[in-house]
Image 1: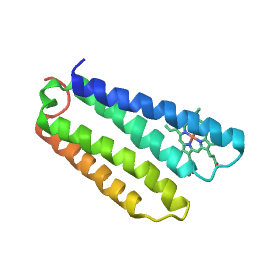
Image 2 (image 1 turned 180 degrees about the vertical axis):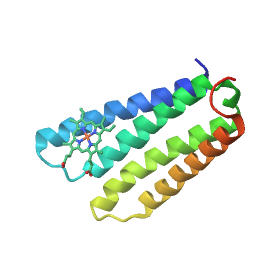
Image 3 (image 1 turned 30 degrees about the horizontal axis):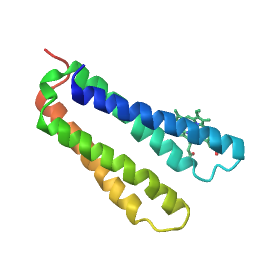
Length: 123
Ligand code: HEM
């Protein structure tokens, strides 16, 4: 497996493990107040990263510098948007959530341009 695909998958699996542990903690405590942050960690961290991993595994031609920028932007996005949502939901300000939102959408814009340039698959 190429490095960028493996790295996306590893970030996805770590996000899933943390997200599931967080879900179990919410269930056990009965406090679902941070469910929006839990959901975003699982969906942006696990689902979106895993889709990117599969894309780069199937499209080796796309694994260049732009893919590295995509990876770094996506990781920075998830590690800022999740605590940002926690802060926003807790009434501690929305700045971090806004920064995370911009980084996350930028990573998807980057992904879109990579798919546009390289297509999908090795043909
Ligand atoms: C061990 C695994 C998991 C546990 C124990 C768990 C637990 C929970 C709990 C307790 C809630 C709050 C429900 C409520 O207040 O109505 C929740 C919400 C949610 N979870 Fe999970 N979860 C798990 C895994 C996942 C995964 C893998 C995903 C997505 C890939 C996910 C996505 C969501 C979504 C979208 C919500 C709704 C958030 C909202 O309405 O604000 N969860 N989960």
